[in-house]
Length: 267
Image (tube, rainbow, N blue to C red; front, top):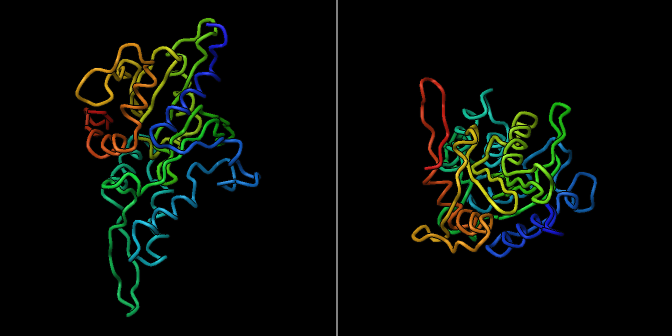
């Protein structure tokens, strides 16, 4: 296990993500105040320029007024309960954002704004960022890897040092709980959570207990992956490859009413 540290696992993870189609950037490199900054302050969890560009690219017939309305609705989720807020944003991602605008003749028009191109993965912006710092209500958190689609943080991948004494995959799970409590805005659009200690990996959804974080054992969806592959690599190839990630987002995430409480599940 010598040299098999969290940093080594993180770099391997980023390489696997790049291999399946994600661009990789350092959180420090795009942090506020840097020459390549992609946000104005650490409280912002959406990469605004990327989201604006995606909305314009996917909705070329809509005026700026309509796109600005869609941007506001995507970045200012309503509601107190995190899972209820997540359900509302999930609907916007899948169904589009209903907007209104005034046409050239002065009439009010309605339209549905596309947020993600589900037909063509290449029509979206895929960005993996490591060590992305977030500050909310004086809580500062820095997840290991975030996955942004069109500027929206849709997945969090958290690691724990496999060489550290007493560190387990559930240490990474507990770290996720700390993030959810301290910087809840980061999780408003979240689709996927994953934890790994470099040996094992588990995937789950927002609000799920540890018993619902499960291994992911297939890449193709038809056969089990080679047992010699690292579990984290299988998660990335099997769930995070762009086409598969879009399928997961659109077709395999459900919200159910469980005795008055909304529960999110990955079907």
